[in-house]
Image 1: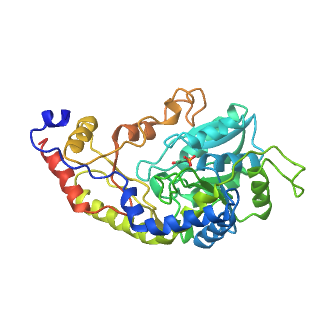
Image 2: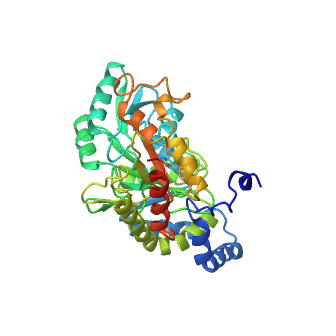
Image 3: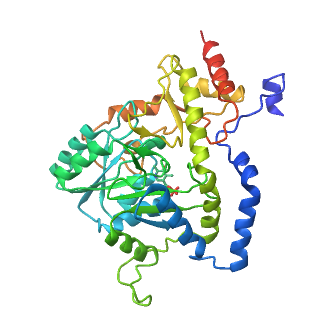
Amino acid sequence: MTQALKQPETPAKQIPFIDLKTQLEEIRSHIDAAINRVFNHGNFIMGPEVYELEKELSAFCNAKHVISCANGTDALGLGLMAKNVGPGDAVFVPSFTFAATAEVVAWVGATPVFIDSLADTYNIDPKSLEQGIQSAQKLGLKPVGIIPVDLFGQPADYDALQAIAETNQLWILADGAQSFGASYKGRKVGNIGDMATTSFFPAKPLGCYGDGGALFTNDDELASIFKSLRVHGQGTDKYDNVRIGMNGRLDTLQAAILLEKLKVFPLELSARQKTAEAYNEALKDLVQIPYIMEETTSAWAQYTVCIPSSLDRGRLMSDLKDAGLPTMVYYVKPLHLQTAYKHYPTATGGSLPICESLAHKVLSLPMSGYVQDPTHITNLFKHVCNSYR
Ligand SMILES: *Cc1c(COP(=O)(O)O)cnc(C)c1O
């Protein structure tokens, strides 16, 4: 083993970054039974579990309508299709996010306008959004909507965004891919914005064993459009397609798996919260710990800190890995600097200083509902940092 050459002693056992294995061990028999039920009834497309899941998700987050779909990216795309977004339209998105948030805007031929983030919550900056709206207008684009992202699990500041949306007659499509289970001023993610989405990608807070996603809305008309778009734009008569849609359905098997995962989800959310609190307490004097707004909870998709500029992040990550502690960087490059997106406008017409600086200093620690020993993790972290003194 090459590792044995580098380290004479046994290489440190790696702590899992996201512990999906322990979760599966705990609920395996229920998952097996759920999969078997689907095999037995054989309704692999839009089987009863799909509708049952939509009902359960609706009860969980108090959204009137839940429309499951194939993945979190399609969910966003369906939202834009329902709003008839197209060429000449400007949709405002944070630059510090996963590519899917902006990708869907380009899908429909509209222009994503990149907005800067807040240094403390990592979420879209309302001030920068206002600047972005003006920039878009100067470019001759028509501002139509905002896709705020609840980055790392914390909802964006929706009250501030809603005020701007109302003034400018914009809709809000909340990208809750990372935040299902979180809440903002008493409202759960799914029940915020004109429409909201989530993703059931395995590594998300509520993940399945493949791809999956969902749309949420309290608007009856939007809900019926989503349902139609999800199945090729079908009308009430399924042989008359009334609009251009897509094949965007969630598999029955994934719905069956999600129904089982949803049962343990509340416990996992509190375990994530406990882990985050333990990390916060142990690391608050060493790094900038995540800031959660008042009356807001996070689903803790990621626990992300900012390291001081005195630390070399690459070296720190490599030393932590040697100590058995895996870390990740979300995100190395903001979207407005990426090859496919750099020709799109930004709020400032140029650089977005906060997200560019975040990209250099963020670091995410292991997080899931099954972190065994947070103290061990923070001790390893402290130990490696102290070794640089
Ligand atoms: C994961 C993610 C998506 C896309 O979800 P998929 O299910 O992978 O398509 C969209 N937005 C954000 C912020 C994400 O983290």
